[in-house]
Amino acid sequence: MSLVSNIKLTFPPRQPRSFSKFFFVLCLLAITLFNAVDLIKTVKDVYMFKKVLPYQNIGYKFAGLEEFVKGEEIVGYYTDNDLNQQEHSKQFSHAQFILAPTILDLNNLEHEYIIFFCSKESVAWQEMEKIGAAPWRRNQFGVILARKDIFANPGSHF
Image (cartoon, rainbow, N blue to C red; front, top):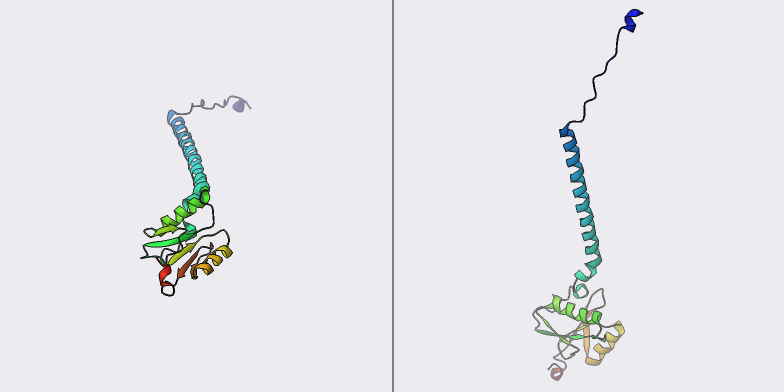
């Protein structure tokens, strides 16, 4: 037993962490923090984009009509909405933007082609009946492109 009592267990002294390990961990934390801040900024930007998105789809209610008025210099635009209200005046501006270079003549029913953008479709039908126009195209938003037969009423075009 004397042999066992003379053996002394010794452990090497604990080495302090090296500077390179500390620097690596510090860099890793800095990169993670920088990326987290950048991620938060990007998520906020995406959220703002989604919030503004409906206003970026300018003229979507009139999309598709441009191919049918192509080549026409002036097209009538009839609405029963109050254009003094911002939302309704925006719609007119959006229509003008989408259909450019065609000029929209507001509430003039004397042109061969007339766009009807009314609060109710029945109002558009009544106006078309009054002026002798027939619906030529209608989109999913209720916008009607009507055509007057200018040869049937030769004096009514100008």
